[in-house]
Image 1 (cartoon, rainbow, N blue to C red):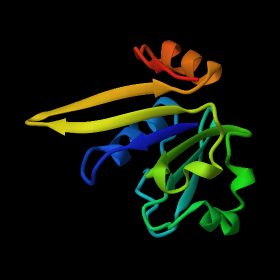
Image 2 (tube, rainbow, N blue to C red):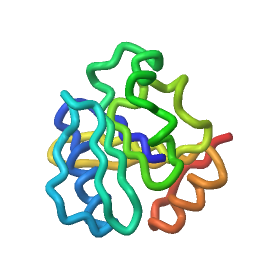
Image 3 (spheres, rainbow, N blue to C red):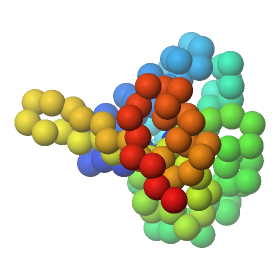
Image 4 (cartoon, one colour):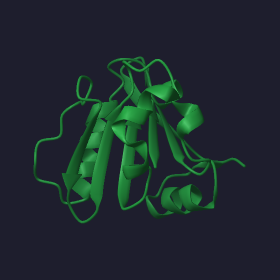
Length: 129
């Protein structure tokens, strides 16, 4: 699970598109702001969620969250802070920030699987509990 944090325009959807490309997905990846979740097939299945319009984790129930919570692919979640209580403990958190003309990325892994993912991706991730 990869959680993307950042203000509007920070590049969350662009990063999700790059992850999709890395998974060999050729279909156009767009922000699922109004559909909430989109699924793509590549080397691994990609679940791309945008939780911007959700008010809390209870809003995930109608989306069959069990189907995409890291079971058989990669889940990329924009605005994860809105549903944090429903997310697994072990996840890779990426904070995207715009500082002047530069975009920065601050990775943080919250467990062993996300730490391994960060290491394999070449990210120097801050490792949490």
